[in-house]
Amino acid sequence: MARLIHLSDLHFGAHDPRLVDAVVQRVDEEKPDLVVISGDFTQRARTEQFKEACEFLDRLREAGHDVLAVPGNHDVPLYDVFRRFLSPLTRYKRYIDDTLCPLHELPGVTLLGINTARSLTFSDGRISEEQIAFIRDTFERTDSGSLRVLVTHHPLFELPVGDTGEVKRAAGRSDLALDAAAEAGVDMLLAGHHHTASTHSARDLVTRAGPALVVQAGTATSTRLRDEEQSFNRIDIDGDSVTLTLQTWKEDRFESSSAQRFELEGDHWRVAGNEKTLDEAAH
Image (tube, rainbow, N blue to C red; front, side, top):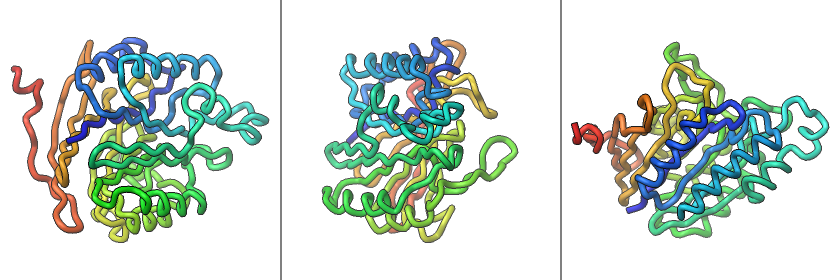
């Protein structure tokens, strides 16, 4: 079995320091095999914000946690036009990770990150044809029996967001990326961007997309909220069974607030049950 912690949208520069400390504490308690961070480390891609994000990553790594990270649109300078177009991710590479397409393999699980942040399509993101080919080629070289996870900042689906259910656009060329993901046998898609947590089966969203489980993370530490408290995901993978436990901010700490178990049956993820969380069991 493998355990992932899925964080997103930290937004250093518009963050709550209490939540940063609480995330580190909760990650230590959960003892994951890998921490996945799906972009937006900073609010405005400024050096001091990246330094704060780097210090956060150092705390995780010094505690023994491996990290897989991809950039988000807020990690590209918005107002510094010169840097935005000529060297958009230089600071990200210096302070976070110089690899924009990280690959990490755990026993039974293969994870690949893809950068969707762009200088032109700043908010919505985009995937290039080269990246689409890279998804196919990379997973083709990995263990065919492992559960395959694709990590992006921008979702590859149009998704309803918040209390209003407003449908937000998917990343550019997402249709081609989904075709590639389906052909590569991707089982799970992790993303952020919308600051809301949700889980879907890909076939419920786009019939051509294969059987992937679509997992969205909320914001873990940002003060910029959208209809829900700060949160992140704990994902437990056991063969063709995945248990997703939402970790939600409750006054002074993160607690397990809900848990759902999914099982892969043929070409569809089925909700197998609502699990009782450890925090609920303690009360």
